[in-house]
Length: 136
Image 1 (tube, helix red, strand yellow):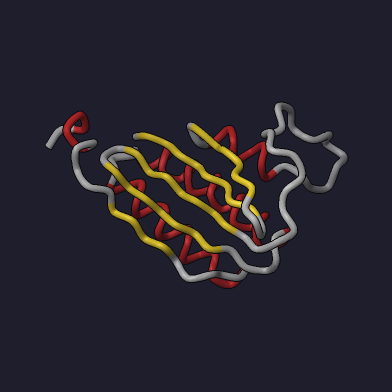
Image 2 (cartoon, helix red, strand yellow):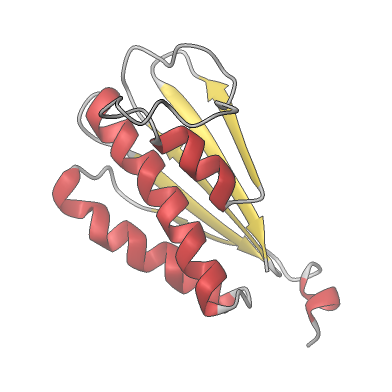
């Protein structure tokens, strides 16, 4: 089957149980596997996995201590939704510039947005959901 025909294939969806910091490695493995199965070259799969990792870590640190991750693979596209139960996210815009070099943190959203094709914010009644998408 060619990549052009893969978009007709039904999506494969995996929803991981909520994870805390010790469960992040399993999320990375699942995202990398989905990216490889979608046809991503190894380096692109790695970059997408780093983007998801940044968002998952942010959700755990700032969103209530755990994150729920859903991975959807459809043809050559992988979409990952990261949900938390925190007090929400301030602003819904991706930072355009990296934080100043002397700032100790605050690079996760900026970095993730540069390592995937699309990153969007979706405020929820409790917490937030961030969606990342890339295509092989």
